[in-house]
Length: 402
Ligand SMILES: *Cc1c(COP(=O)(O)O)cnc(C)c1O
Image (tube, rainbow, N blue to C red; front, side):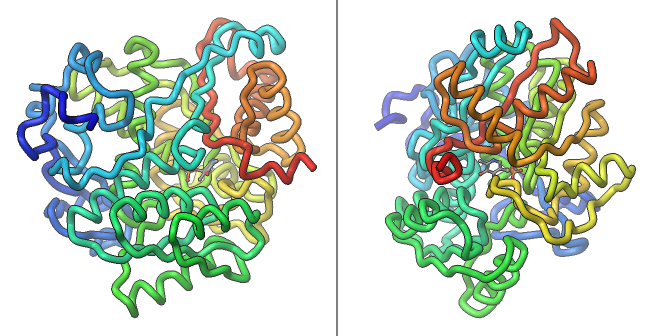
């Protein structure tokens, strides 16, 4: 297998420098090796902390050159301790494509696309759920539950299948058939809910309490964030340790954005980068834009968006438990938040497709739509380096193209 010839593997130990958990809001510190969901004090998300001096002994920029092409190349800064619990389908280490034909079309030289559609189950949700389900497996969990707008449920079902863990999925009843069929094929029990992701969360929580299922909702356990932070490590590594000027990210629950922001801080502690950071941009759908509204209103938290609607299933998130972490990252980075229409998402998905041969999800199209707006407003300047995140493939959304 992959790790058999890895020089860094010591017997069954997959070395991790994971030390403890810390609340992202009240800073309370908690023991690493037991199951946690939200902070027991303030009910905010918990963040994994590491000993970077220890991690840096084996995790060096040079050592990475020898490592496998998946997110486990950064295992010292991931929370799994033993190799036998690591569940992998080769997630992560996706290409960062210099989009030259698209760049020519929009008259901009340094445009890059991080192509997350190539992950197992066709979205970047695989990163978070590979790590979260592995860690739950390591801590003895036998049943897992998730409320999901689509891609997260498929990813979870893939890794629970590998572990032999029972999986329970709660999805809005109007999610496209491709998302439902995928979960069923992967062995999950699917319950369709008349409502939005927030309603799914409420119903899933009843089963969690009654049947002792472990809840892996976005940011309600600490490890999906750890999987998604690897996008930050990868962008740095793939750009030869010089971060881009701007990152445009389609934001639902915000795990990827918060995760990358955490990764930049960790890489600074490892001595790999300095204080410079990209300006982080959140893109949302115009009929579900709680972060955009809170950002421009100067709020610390984002009020729930009423009557949320968008065809971009990953962006149909009216309220997020990590709202304050998203807003902090946007502000500290000198970034911004912008809403785009569903029509613009598809139009620009088509432009990306025509120029680069990528079939993006509408969320991916949204990043290009936002880029065009920000370029027009001269918020992005010529000569800057910009990374767009195509967070998933368009295949599960093919119905949108008629
Ligand atoms: C879930 C999802 C998003 C939103 O990701 P968050 O990290 O929760 O903000 C964006 N795009 C796609 C394709 C998704 O599945």
